[in-house]
Length: 322
Ligand SMILES: NC(=O)c1ccc[n+]([C@@H]2O[C@H](COP(=O)([O-])OP(=O)(O)OC[C@H]3O[C@@H](n4cnc5c(N)ncnc54)[C@H](OP(=O)(O)O)[C@@H]3O)[C@@H](O)[C@H]2O)c1
Image (cartoon, rainbow, N blue to C red; front, top):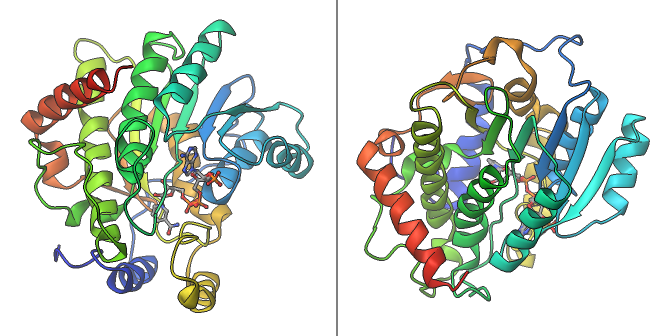
């Protein structure tokens, strides 16, 4: 794949739209009988956009849904209850740009003895430039990658997943394929950048997330199958993701998103397939682009990168004092 394919806002938008029209061989299709009755699900960033649609569809399929959000509490949950006709919806507060908030969230899950059959790590952001978090990291690095490393590992330690059963799903992006090689030396080091670097860094951080997902599966499923660890790119979604784009481009972006991008409910299809499909029982390491099964980029599959990323991420968290 050409390195520039998703590397600037214009080619990323154009190629995302073209992907929707390319021929796909779908992995399968859910039937109305593929339900989540009696299951407990977690969806991060579910107050809006893709996450909201995932939470709603999970509630419609009978799941008890925990919406882990930093805003929209309780309105988004109330909206989902109304739209799905289910009362099995709870909202929990989490700010993924704060390690303290993530740790508080894990402690609450542990205290309440919650266990998730399906957890979707969906929340992410596209900022207008660099911004330092209270933990000293770049906000996009922390929200889009490091927070997931801390949250998923913390939830595993807290016993929030069921061995042999739970599915852990990462919402990723095809833009991970355009990322440069991982710079382990400078990983997590805060550097100033402006809008022009945002899209290439977004792809780079999505690559880190895929490397982590693969390493997580290697570690958890080493001897016997424990968890279904999946990732996907939903394709272009008509959501609020470009909220920090320059105001002058907003009317054009809204028009393009509205005409060409998939609605969040349509874009939720691959997530719901990974969450519900009986065909994935006992399986792990499936990556979907839209509804088609693919291999992640070779950089994401590299075993040594997985090992190094894990070690470096642990060092970063330890050095942050948490
Ligand atoms: N939109 C696309 O074209 C597209 C394409 C490929 C992949 N994706 C991926 O799809 C996923 C969902 O994105 P979307 O399009 O639905 O975007 P969105 O409408 O902007 O939703 C992003 C969600 O992430 C949450 N979030 C952001 N920063 C957070 C933080 N610090 N703590 C907690 N939650 C935070 C947001 O909460 P607030 O509302 O409180 O900010 C929101 O709920 C992301 O992983 C994205 O990378 C999107």
